[in-house]
Length: 124
Image (cartoon, rainbow, N blue to C red; front, side, top):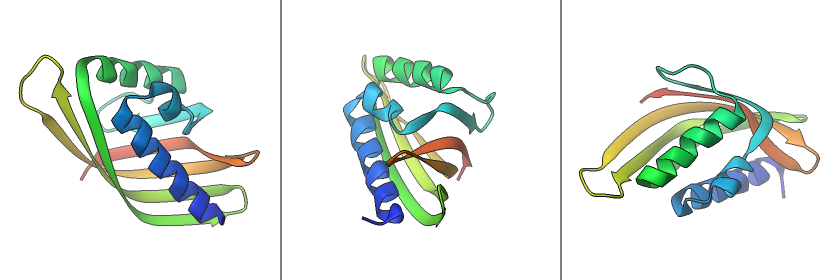
């Protein structure tokens, strides 16, 4: 498997985990020293990201769809660029919220695994 294929596989696993509400598997996608910058929010650590996602999983039925537009790998670093759509539907009823975002992720190879250690997104 090439590094690009390994990253694509990791993204597919992330999508499956997120759509299943599997927080542990979602967090395995990220390095321990993650910095996540989301539009309109302060940068988050992995711990802060975990809390935000756990809160979302508690309150909403969540789904994500990712469109990868680019993967570039150089040695033990890589970046991915694309867009995603998140649908959040309150578990106790109500209209769903749909978020459309563009993203840029910087990946680092940690042993045999590729993980995101810097990521940012903004409105598509």
